[in-house]
Length: 202
Image (cartoon, rainbow, N blue to C red):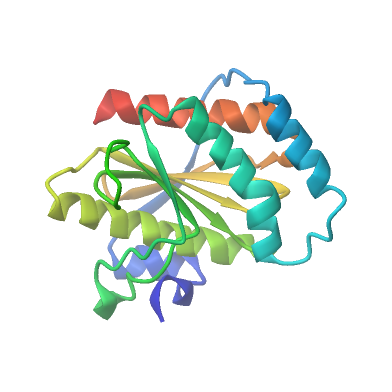
């Protein structure tokens, strides 16, 4: 079944011997004002019926992540819908909604994978579990390609609500509060901080 079979966080933590904690992952966040293109794109999205994961991914999540990529295109590559098949026998396989690799020069998927974004239609608990399984798979993928990094980040979003996660030293840290779409400048600031943290600890 792949990553989607993980519906509860304790499925992931139990199976892969991980701990979980709540934490403040970011401290002070410097807002980054969105470009006029992103502001316009999100305004158009308000006129569309956002009633399933696919349309939310296309109209909200993809534009925000594309803006992040444009801000950091010399640091990361952005992938959408790529298969990350690490360990099918452990359901660590299948497509991932979006993720960043800190290898911007590569045309194809390559290590190190540094951050994920998973879209879920209102089911945040399922999204967190699925994203954590993907993050753990990425740690194995990076190790297998001799590009291990200390931390891998994840984000789960319904389009309106955004929750952030970090996997480090076999512990899953879930940020203590959610962010929302009307805080888009803060969301961009969070992603900016994530990418800068990754580059510092690689």
